[in-house]
Length: 511
Image (cartoon, rainbow, N blue to C red; front, side):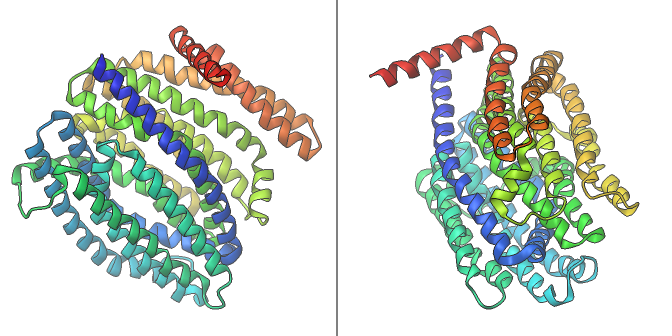
C-alpha cells in the first residue's frame, strides 16, 4: 500500500508541475500564434505548417522505433535490472543514430522531389519553402537523437524538467516571432532558421541532465543483438500504428494541400494548435499516469493497472470535455478575439478537431496498456490496419471534390472503430474487463457530454447579443459540466473523494 501511495503522490506532484507549466504556456501560445499569423500572413503560415508536416511525415521511418525505446526503458525501470537498463538505453541510442542518417537522406531526396513536384506552393515562395524544409530536417534529426534521453526523463517521471524547459521553449519562440514581425526581409526564412536555436538548447540540456542524473544514461559503445532484436521486433509491428498516426495527421494535411491552397492548411493548422493548447490540460495528467501503467504491468499488478486505466481515462476525458464545450460553441468569437483575421474553414475544422480529440482520449490508456505488453503483432495488424484507412479514404474523397473538413469526419469515424477493436484485444492481452470499460467509461462519457452541452446550447441559440452570449455560454458550460460530472459521471467512492478534497481545501483556506 505504501508503494501505491508513493506512486499516487508522484502522479499528483507531476500533474501539478505540468499544470503550472501549462497555464503560462497557454497564454504564451495564444500570443505566439496570433503574432505569427500577422507576421507571415495566411499563405506563408500555411506553407510553414504543411512543409513542416512533410518533414514530420518521415517519422513513418522513426516513429515505431521511438515508441519502442520509450516502452523498453520504462519497462526496464519496472523490472529494476540496472545493467540491462543501460544496455537498453545504449541500444536505443545506436538505433536512433542510424535512424537520423536514414531520415536525413530520405528527406533530401524524396522530400525535396515531393516539395517541388507535388505540393501546391506559389512559385515566388518556393525558395522560402526549401529553407523551411531544410531547417525542419535539422530540427527533426536533433529530436531523433534526443529520443532515448527524453524517454528516460518520462520513465523516471521527472516532469519538472519538462515544465521548466517547456516554459523556456515557449518564451523563446514568442521572442523569435516578435523579432520576425519587425524584420524587413523574408520573414518565413528567418523564422525557419532561428527556430532551431531553442530546439538545440533544449536538447543539449536534456542530454546533460540525463547523463548527470540517471545511471543508465551513460553511453558506452556496444551492440546487444538480443535487445536490438527485441526492440526491432516490437517496432516492426508497431510500425503499422505509428505510420497510420502520421498518415492521419501529416499525410492528410499534405493531401489537403494537393487539392486546396495553403490557406486551407493554415486553417487546419490553427485548429490543430487550439486542440494542442486545450490538450495540455489533459496531456499533463496522461504524461503523469502512463509510465505508472507500464510499470504496474511489468510488476504484474493488473488490479492497480486496470484502476489507473479506468480512473485516468475518466479524469482526462472530463477535463477536456469541460474546456471543449464552451470552445465548441463560441469558437467564432474566440478566433476573432485571438487572431483578428480568421482563415476560411477554421471554425468547422476546430469544432471537428475537438470532437476527434474527445474520441481519441477514450483510447489513450488502452494504447499505453497495449504497448506495455510488447505483444502487438495481431493488435497492430487489425487496429493499425484500420487506422491506415484514414489516408486513402480522405485522399479519395478530396479527389472527388468533397470539402476539406471531410477528412476529420473520416478520422472520427475510424477512431470509433479502433476503440472497439482495442477493447476486444485488451480483454485477452491484459485481462481488461472490456464490457465494464465500455459501460463505465465510454457510455458514461457520452451521456455526460450530451447532458452537459444542453444548457449552453440553449443559451447559444437563444441569446442574440454576442458579448452576453459569450459569457453566458462559457459560465453555464463550466457549471453544467461540473454538476453533470458529479451527479452522473462519478461513482459513490469517487464522489466521496471529491468531498474529502473540498473539505481539506476549505480547511486550508480558513487557516
